Image 1 (spheres, helix red, strand yellow):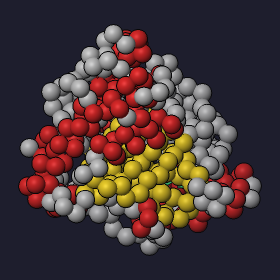
Image 2 (cartoon, protein in one colour):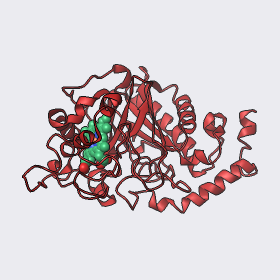
Image 3 (cartoon, helix red, strand yellow):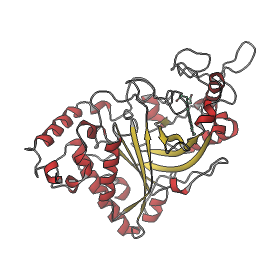
Image 4 (tube, helix red, strand yellow):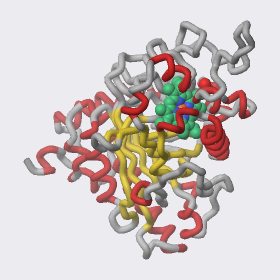
Length: 397
Ligand code: HEM
């Protein structure tokens, strides 16, 4: 089947497949009011259920506080060597223009002039799954310097941490693209399509897939240790205060290898002490319900802390950061029997929070004995593309 047969007539409107997409896209529009900010409901990001509320255009990019899909693909790119200075700004502006038109067409049903994306895999991806796609674009610390453009002062490389075992094959990048969907074929196809559209400007540097286990709607997915992961995430109001800043945010990526077999050999009680939560319910130790408060100051009548001193939730507690929160949106990764772990993805208004928590974890957290940070990147998530505007408009002028 040719690309043209799969996707369609120049105006698209007479093609049944295209019409169906547009109808669904229109139906999704009604849902987007709730998708542009934090979702309401439980504190963890619920697994998607029913029609996905994602759109590409809006003041904020999707893929941060929108419901978490089950598949993720992070691709890090570098600017090609010729893309520098004022010429580089022009090249990246054009690249972002192509990405914006492509994504607005596929996700929002915009009908631009004949689109270069028509002939790509993104359009060939099957059915509903395409509409669960979110694309989140963020720039790395080197990009503003190479293009001589202004950037938020908080956009800096992360410092080295004592236990880091970073592999250059999974680190850095002038641009990070987070693609999430309910089907890994959708993220893979979108990455292929967008990489092709960026070919003269961006060169892929590394990539990492992530997945969530099948999880009933509204429940918290489990990580490879078997614990619920993502329970204690900021509420919508807390996201406004601690995640977003002028419709932008920061993304910290860590590819964390986990000694799954070593951890599994511990008894359940010992595992729970290390995490600070019950394994089955996800409740904080000493509690019964997953979303009960994690009170790191509570003590037993014998004067012992209920949440152990060397537990993970204590080291990570926002109470030690004057209430500052990060939004964790992590995925499991599986790169074969010797390398499984957590693709840690967290959004926050200042990556200094990650640095503080990570230092505490290195110093006190028993979970660190079972983990090895092998990949790392930090990036500034651009504000969204408003109607008539391209991604990066405010960065590149
Ligand atoms: C493989 C590594 C890691 C694993 C397996 C892991 C697992 C968990 C689990 C099971 C919880 C409790 C449930 C929840 O609230 O989501 C949790 C909480 C948390 N983790 Fe991690 N985590 C890892 C690494 C990290 C890192 C690197 C950071 C940041 C530097 C971090 C920050 C947090 C925070 C902020 C919380 C919530 C604490 C609270 O408010 O109670 N985690 N993690």
